[in-house]
Image (tube, rainbow, N blue to C red; front, side, top):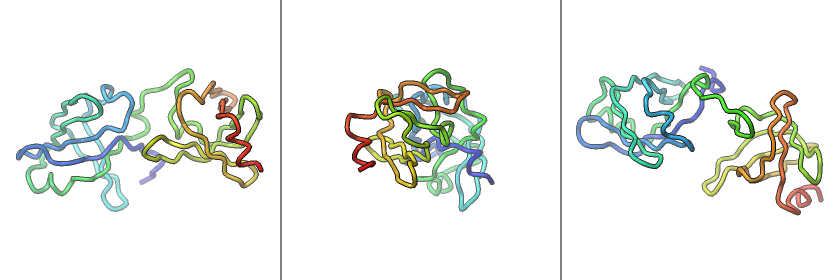
Length: 174
């Protein structure tokens, strides 16, 4: 299956009780948008395998308790640490300056001071904060992917306007 057709939603952290329920970490800023899921996909080998949801309960923050249909006891235990995915078509649309990382790959990145600095190539998810990777003449410029840095997203022109911290871009261009 095409991995570009799915997005990472979270992962199973542990079992909950003895009836096959699972604790899930939802890696999203708005977990409440996923409280009515009917199915998710788990990565098994190189395949996305659908799992129908019997029940889901959000537990504050980014945590949920999920019970999959026809999954009990030992089988639930075998799913711990599995990553959870949804089809990209399930993403709620974003407007204005909010965007999904996959949406701006290939966009021209324009800094407030330096002007055009390259093309958004990727995002690296590190524990403190995600990092945007910008390709500039075969050099990588790494910019923290935090809301304050992104000034404007022009989806029609495929441009991402940023205000990188002072001196950051110079480090990569020297």
